[in-house]
Image (tube, rainbow, N blue to C red; front, side, top):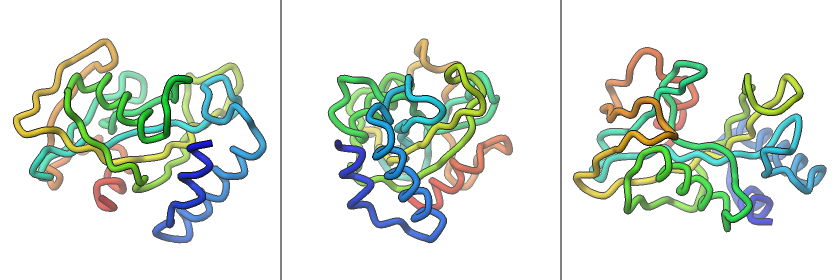
Length: 172
């Protein structure tokens, strides 16, 4: 219900994002389990791009499968009260940072194929992307959710940073 409410109220910044918004809403209408990882072929996921307290750096994780720098995020869990709560939980689990705050309004949507999610291929994550802010002097902690974490200046991202992350930074 929260995903439907969030996407109904969200003002897409352009025609491409509006098309995704409408596709996500249609998916939610067609699949009662649309936010569950068990929904195949596609399911909604939640992510958070973590900014430093001064908004000059972002914390990225090197994805262990696709080998690109990404924002934190992943599957919604049944106990998540909202899409932003799912994004915040994922951000905390993957970064190890306590005290993150999240804007409850999404910034962008991103539909991308995932190589190892579910029994049917191709499958897609219908990602709802948020922005979180770390407290001052926050230190990331490698957890079993992350292979590598690193702070990057927003204008000095590594060359293998995913294009969706660059778009999310530009839109934030």
